Length: 171
Image (tube, rainbow, N blue to C red; front, side):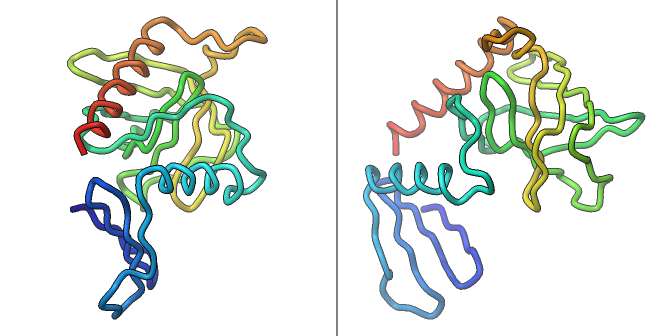
C-alpha cells in the first residue's frame, strides 16, 4: 500500500482504489475506485490549478521507479530535481534541495534528461512557479505553430508512458 499525508488527510492506495482518512479516524471518510480516482484527478487538474488547465497534452506522471533523472542548469548552477510529470511540450519538476537557488518565470534553463543510459539536453523556459515546483516548457517542441517535439524527446515520453501504463495495469 502507498500512503500520502496532506495536512489532516491521509490518502491510502491499495492498487484497487484510494481511501481518504481523516486524522484519528478508525474508518475511511471516503473510498474511491479506480474510475473515480481518474475523475478526481481530471477535476483537480482542470479546476484546482490557478488559471485552470492550460496544458493541452497528456502528462505522464513520474515516480522514482520511472527511471528518469533530470538536472536543470541555470547559469553556472546545476540543480538536482525530482521530476513529477512530463509531456511532449514540457515537464514539472521539484528541486531536490529546497534551499537551492529559486527559478523565476521566463528563466531560460538547460534541462538534462537521462533515461536508461541515454542522455538528451533540451532548452527550457520556466513557465510556472509554485510552492511544489516549476513548470518547464521545452522550447524546441513549439518552434512552429504545431507541437513538433524532437524525435528523441517524443520517444522518451512514449517509453515513460508505456512504463506508467504497464505499472497501472499491474496494480
